[in-house]
Image (tube, rainbow, N blue to C red; front, side):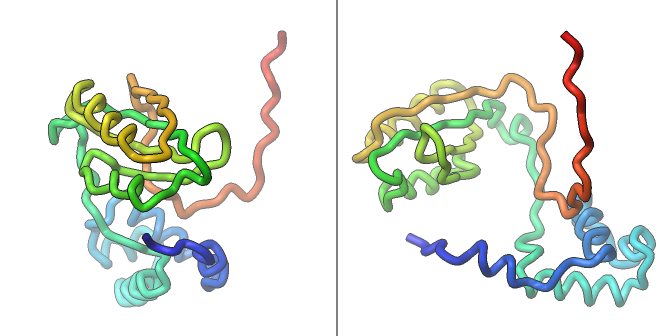
Length: 175
């Protein structure tokens, strides 16, 4: 089991991102396959400068991976669900972490609240979800699950480089 203590502190110690870094990251998040020449045009830097910045962002861990985002329905996994796992203690156990070996499990998060862990899973049908829930319930210490099946997805995107400098004041609608 990987020790995750201190990860947030390490991220805080990284060099601050400037406006060009954030523009590069935003452009790469939208399309990681573009050339350094196109990327340079989009952000207002020369291709060699963009290349050096991307190398630095990779070395520092800001850019973790470059991946293809697959369409769940196109690969035969149209069912998206979020599974809240209730477990004794903190919930994270070596056995529960073994659930990650199933390719249907896309994300696992330790959370505060009434669940110990939240899983994002993508499956081919309800029967596959039932089988996965059976695997989770077989883990010692798991006391229950709650599953939320997504009917529609309105926004799904990777981490964004931009930050909101000032949150707008949004009035509630009148009664």
